[in-house]
Image 1 (spheres, rainbow, N blue to C red):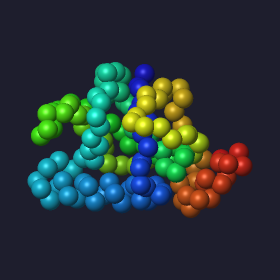
Image 2 (cartoon, rainbow, N blue to C red; image 1 turned 135 degrees about the vertical axis):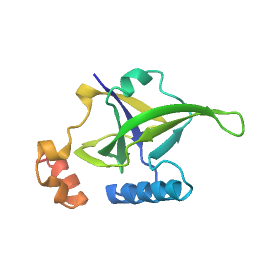
Image 3 (cartoon, rainbow, N blue to C red; image 1 turned 90 degrees about the vertical axis):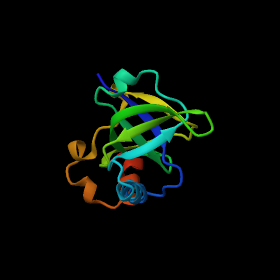
Image 4 (spheres, rainbow, N blue to C red; image 1 turned 45 degrees about the vertical axis):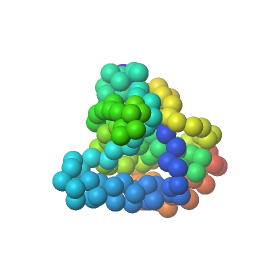
Length: 145
């Protein structure tokens, strides 16, 4: 059973902001001749790497709600130029909308059990991905989505 990672998307105002940021980062990597993956660098490497790599995703919290996810392709611990241990989370650069769910702010990242992860939006409410994000948030707040 996969284990997921939950992370705040600091600075993103919407899923579209996050998508734009990912697209820009992937384009920069390709321009440098690197892989076209989306990479997020963290300070701490997941100790439960095997479970995360067994189909896990990174779930992004945007403006106080879990809104989307990206599948994690690899976890690459490394040491930076200053000698500090870090970790690359390598994701498939495809954002998948999920059932919006409120989540309080936190630092770093957290594990998210598969049984507790929000369902993909397309599976739970076909066509909802075409609604504006604010409408999806409001419907979720009213318990209608």
